[in-house]
Every structure is written in C-alpha cells, then in structure tokens.
Length: 147
View 1 (tube, rainbow, N blue to C red):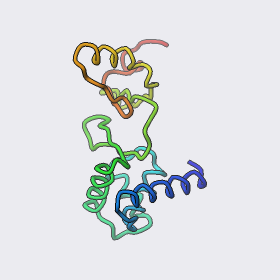
View 2 (spheres, rainbow, N blue to C red):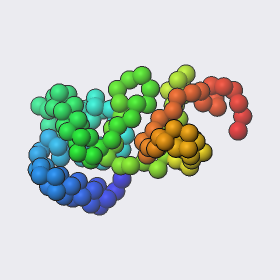
View 3 (spheres, rainbow, N blue to C red):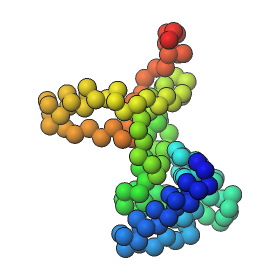
View 4 (cartoon, one colour):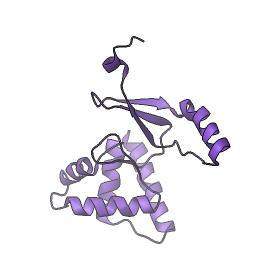
C-alpha cells in the first residue's frame, strides 16, 4: 500500500473512532498502522511489527486492542487454518481458499459464493456474509489436478 493511501486510511480510521466516542491512542495507532502495512496479519505478526517501533508493547495489549477495534467494526478477523485468526482493516472482495495440506491461501472472487448465498437465503433465511470468509480444502497442487 502506498504511503498516501496509508495516510488517508489512517485519517479515516481516526474519524471513525472519534464518531464512536473514542480517541486514537498511540497503541491503537500502532496496531492500525501495522494492519495497514501487513494487510492480513495474526496478532503475533501485528505484535512483531509494532515492536519494531515500540519494543515495550506486549501481546496482551495487541489482543485487547484488536478485540476493541473489532467490536467497533474497524477491523475484521478470519481463521485461515488451525492457528491464530488473521485480522484486517479492509473488507475484502475475495474468499480465502485454504489448503489444509500445504497451507497455501488462494484468494477467489466473492462471486464464487453467490449460488450458495442464494441457496442459504432461500432454504434457511440465512444471510451469508462472504466479505471475509475462509474455506478449507485441498489446492490444485496437492490434489495433482492440472489447470
């Protein structure tokens, strides 16, 4: 992400916090900056990124900050496997396809889920949110299928 884009995102996130009656603390700023730079990141990855600037910030602060920011709708998380969740500030236009053999993550357009979304709505009245979804399976390489 370009520096100008990060600055614009940072300003927008600050305004969102203020509208919700909260201020942008240094810790929140560090966490958001890390997420803007990394795009998808586990709490541990966020912590490593933050600690390059402020070594005294600990993982507990990162988890609390991510939890607060998620409760405010500023960040989202998804599980890309069995490990820690991955966080992002952006609503993604894709679905994550996670290979449970090799760990590869493929980003497929959200449109691949439209038929399932319609089926779930029609049969169960369930509105599927595919804005940050991960599906597990086996990738083409691991299944040995050609393109």
